[in-house]
Image 1 (tube, rainbow, N blue to C red):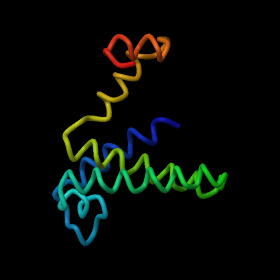
Image 2: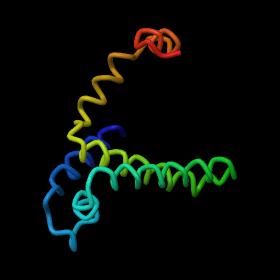
Image 3: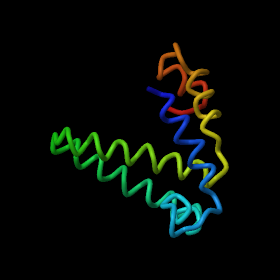
Image 4: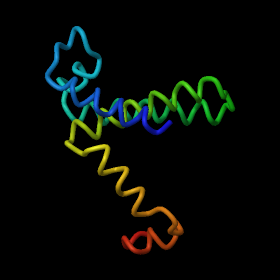
Length: 106
């Protein structure tokens, strides 16, 4: 299932610089990294609201939007999906408390 995110990340990368009239991702990229981050935030808030309302159908849809817009935001700042996955692998099997302490976070 995670492969769909890897395929989506590759598709999103290909959308950079494409015709904004034919690609929603290209339209977001053209608006700049700040707008991409803002859109990710909007989608995250919508997912939070759906979760708070216990609206599982809407939460499922909004979660998909969050993941899509996260990939757009990462790409707009030249952060590669494979690097995010590598970071998750690095953390795998480590307590969240221990991992955060290793980065100096409480």
